[in-house]
Image (cartoon, rainbow over all chains, first blue to last red; front, side):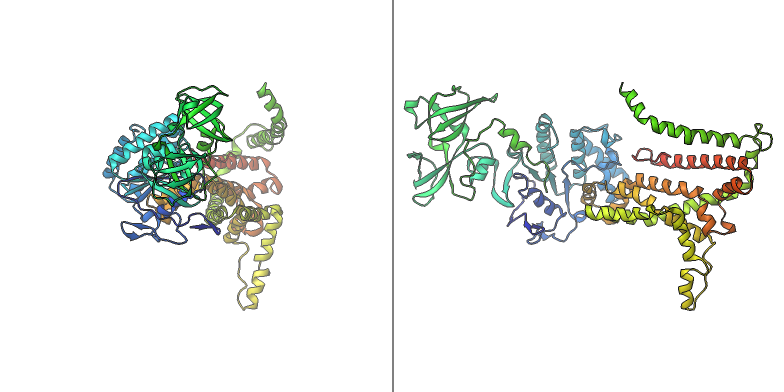
Length: 361
Length: 273
């Protein structure tokens, strides 16, 4: 897929299973919305094909596809009230009036907006508009529902509620959901399958647990959760060397002495007295986060993020132990060395990644 | 405190309105309701209005036809402009405005030169052995003059509304099964209604009261209410009747715009005259 000669999507190859909740996850500009627009029929790919139930649908216009979309910021019709917005697709399809009424009522029930039929769109809150947008799409009983960052405009509490709501609706209706988001937590908690994208390419496809526990490269490891990523060398199967020490691990199948990226999740690291530790370092910063402390520890100039409920005071010397299951090995990739160092750590990293890129094409 | 400040700022305009709109309006009302000779209060000026109802009716007719033609011509243009790149939009917008930079009288006179029996069109047709066609002095010429002069007033408000229609709404309609005709009739047209009401009002109001266009391009049978009013003041020396006619015309315009604003009441951008 190209735009003005610029490659937006590169060699995307995706299968969607029936009744699956699949999420396209990635930072702004990674191509996830473009992918969605191709599936919806609003863009046609410059090369490659889109198949639906085994039929090529590249040239099928959006209005003939059995796919409906919940748009970013909903795109509800301001000249119609709640009822007429939801009934829009059915009226276009020229269904009998009583049938339209029945199905709209059914959808109002599903999204919990009974009694709002004659309300104007402007008088609804963000969460309610969101529900209308979902109802308007689902009332047509599409085989696939596309959702383009539907929760991005909602506040945190409402977003959590709607996540559960969406998951419930998807299970009740038995429809394939293709969901686009840049919020990794949202992706992990809702999806059956997560597709991590960056720079127009798929970085990894898998179940949320697999994506988190077995990231394929430094980008995925960093984008999904927090990761300390170190340079290492795979000495042999189950044996990796970094920081001048050999550790046991659970990974195999690498070339002997292959340089690798080593991922250690901040929450997997346990503090021990310095003399018992595999490594010793100095605490340089401690931030209280509610559930845990974010502690930055300097190991020979490389700073790690450690998330723990054990308080450590700034400036103290600590030791850590790494168990084989805490260590995850990845092949080197173009992303190696770009992520996983917390030298420039700031307490706002959460907000930064969450706010970046609401709007994208 | 804040209120006082804004009153102070709007003061000059309020003064202007008072001196040049409200007081003259009072003068018009005074003349309309007094006897030309004695200056005593009378309704006789208004009683004579029945005579002019046909003229009033045909004025409204001309104005409505012109507004309709402007709408049919202007809508596609406004739609086209609204869907260009921003730079092109600005350029086209200026082109639409350009005729308004020239004198209205001059432009209307130019049409005389084009349409008259010895005019440009008939000269050309004469060389082809056709004509001369009788174009000047016909109702068609009057409508042409109105459409030509007031078309920008239709295009500009339409453009302003159409350009604001969110493209995602169009995609949403396509997504919900609309082909391009249905997208237009179910989404674009309803959302353009405020622009249509504004445009129709802005063409109708000046067209219904014009006298210059009908005098230059029309004939005896295309006399409009504006002509009649003008004549009362200029040649017939009956300002009282002229004032009464003006008053009625003003009420008519107010009623018409009121009705139109009523139609588009829940939409934004209704025009206040």
